Image 1 (spheres, helix red, strand yellow):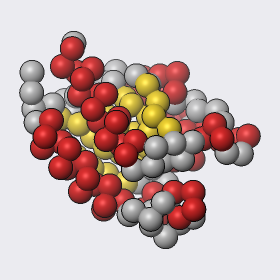
Image 2 (tube, rainbow, N blue to C red):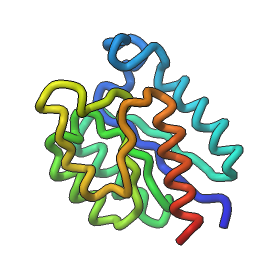
Image 3 (spheres, rainbow, N blue to C red):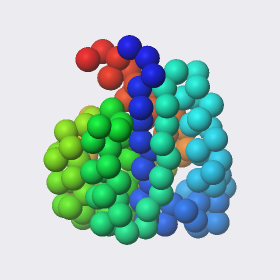
Length: 148
């Protein structure tokens, strides 16, 4: 099966990539990451929708909109990973496979960042590989969808 429809959903403050703490998050912007993923999606023969939302409710609504539109989600929840039960519940409610991705290695950072409430309901988590982590997440998700 080819032509999978994937949502790439980015959480709070990721619109500031390239400017926000470049020593932690790198110099690539979210647009750079989007372009990188669009190239990879073309190679994989899948279709991407790409969104960034700063509000928790907006993130939940974006997950809800996936029903009947997308087959899976690459999700960088940002700080919401550490506390958003609402986002976690949205993921379990729609029942789509989600791959959680973080630019930085959350397990090598501050103690409060080392726990993700999203990870237990995600297909998997990719953390610490910078923008390349999005490509790994997309490849893993497409592979999972094609094996179903």
